[in-house]
Length: 291
Image (cartoon, rainbow, N blue to C red; front, side):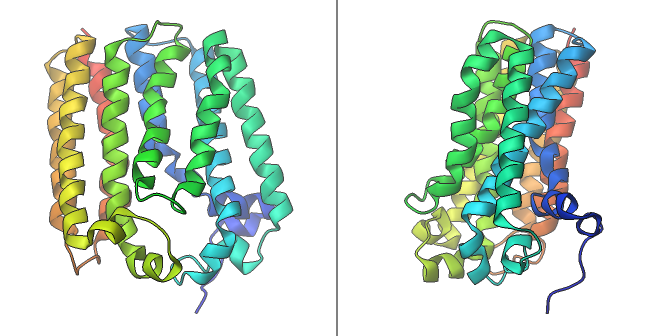
């Protein structure tokens, strides 16, 4: 049975779309963008740059999520887990979501233009990656890595927004984000394993089986923690940062104690609570870690 509408969805079509794209989940990538900006600036950046980075992240993520809901609407309608989303239920039109996607993309491009020439020149490539992810599950089991790459651009983009030349630190940090996101997306895709098999969609749990996919997710998270630490060494951060990395490593380990083959009852706690804390903890650790 389909439940009542969430609070945002009662505020009109825009509220429906914001609820549909889980706007609040911007927290997964936004702190990493600010972390890249902070490290490149070696301290507090200007308020102007921070606001345009915020606008760019909101624009890019909103465009990506709305586009994903748009192109996957017919798939979502067949999946019991996603059939109650706004588009399958007819709570908002495809045309409105398409306009929202276009407006979000324009916000991203405008923000990149306001930042600097490098950000503007790279913005079409960044948008192509975040939008292109929506199609990957149709032809490759590596879609989790593409999603990771989309979010992994956040610290690199933040670094470039400061006007700094590219360096090892943001690349290592971006690599850590890529593997972290890919690992938790593998865990989350376990919820759709049976549906993916029926629908002919690709995922690593479908390709490897649940047990081996869980082992791969553990490996990806272990390596991501090492890359987060390596980024701190490359950026010359102090021990406060590495204490934060240790906390993050504990969060990642806790996910794999909560999520086991045949028992996904605590997956939402793993996905939303622990992963939401990872980026926030690392941003705080980086702020304290700059000597």
